[in-house]
Image (cartoon, rainbow, N blue to C red; front, side, top):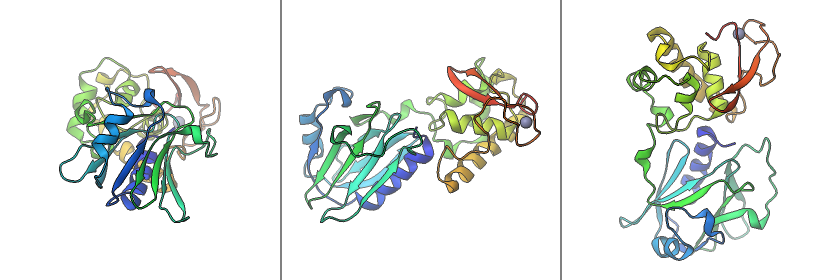
Length: 266
Ligand SMILES: [Zn+2]
């Protein structure tokens, strides 16, 4: 499942290979995939003739800006989305996104939920077997909290300090901090020594500082290893905690399957 690290890989692929190429048309066979009133016709009219000038990201939302003050295209990879860029002339197709731990990498044509054809003959596609992603024009970026890579100590104190929800639920809430999903949050709480079910407002200033370091370490280290599935926390109930050997617990926190160490996470 793409979390911030996988979406960043997809962003980097688009930044390197989709910018500066003029849009000839869009491939939007699935009306349900287009959100906020967009249709194949309106998306085609919005993007036609324009070139992408920047590939940005806020949390898990991918953003492609167009030239001449044109609209921004928003892409959500959902649970299984990958971006494929066909650079044309039979050259390599480049990909980024879902880590394919649970998903197929077959390129079934029906899984191409959206695409942009370039005037130079190439194209890019969003391939999404589970169809839980989405495409929108001019997405509302401000419904998202700050990007997890930019999370500050002050902001973390604000979002934890006023919440009676479990710490895990606050970190998973994209309106509070954008980009962290189930695996990255479990890994960060494991590294930071915080019980995922602990009431957010009771996390002390000292634990908060440790948590912020843990989030930053998680993003940096797992990013370098290749994605959100490369954490140190084994996702196996009863497996020994790599830090202290205590049997790991599995349970549901914030509606998601959660693994934690009952010994050092308090
Ligand atoms: Zn432990």
